[in-house]
Amino acid sequence: MPISDSTLRSLFAVPGKVAIVTGAASGIGKATAKLMADAGARVAVVDLDLAGAEAVAAEIVAAGGQAIGLEADISDEARVKAMTTRAAEALGGVDILVNNAAYRPKADFMEMSVETWDRMHAVNTRGTFLCMREAIRVMRRQGKERGGAIVNISTIGAAHPTIFNNTHYDSSKSAVNGITRTSAAEFAADGIRINAIMPGGVDTEGSRRMREGGMGFDPKGPIMMPGRLLLGSAQPIQLASAILFLASPASSYMTGHVMAVDGGYMVG
Image (cartoon, rainbow, N blue to C red; front, side, top):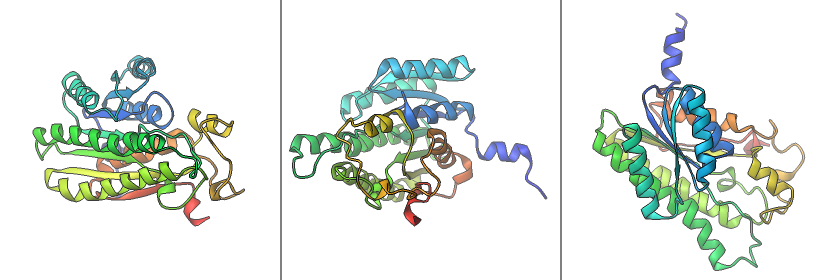
């Protein structure tokens, strides 16, 4: 018997859920926040750029959804706590967390300062931990029946080298993979599923700025080889779709999984 349209909609939708999406003023985060809203979620659009976050939230509201824009430096414990509290109070709890915010400037390995290394890990590793910890506090209070879903955004560079001058970034995201797997085991008993995706090449504003010579980008490395991305560069919505899958009932039996969404880079 074919699956009904209503069943398909219920599997890949998150009606009535509250989603926090970090780094959501642009790129993958923006596409994810808007897709979550289209799928029925009330969305906290979080970014260091408050004006950008509020603009995305306004787009969601104009399209008939519910959203608020919030500011947070995810490396700052007090600001993460305040952001999570505000999101939960304004929207009615926390059901979904998408840890997308990241720090990405490149740096030559031999010239890299300790401060550059520490800033990368403060945002990408500590920030992921802080956002998870505060969201899990709320999810636990809400009870196992309500549970929760967390999707961390890593990089395919955590599994295979991609570009040069990226060791600090890839190592920070390798830690995110470890956090994902270990916390998934710890919080499954609370009904909280924790997964991650590893994007390959994605056509975002940030990646375009890097390709144009900014942020210490050096156009060398395996992923820069012609044809290495078998499906070409992704659009942000293609990553957002994978994130929605991991946050939706369609992936209800998945936790602790780190999923490559890389256009075939790993088999290229």
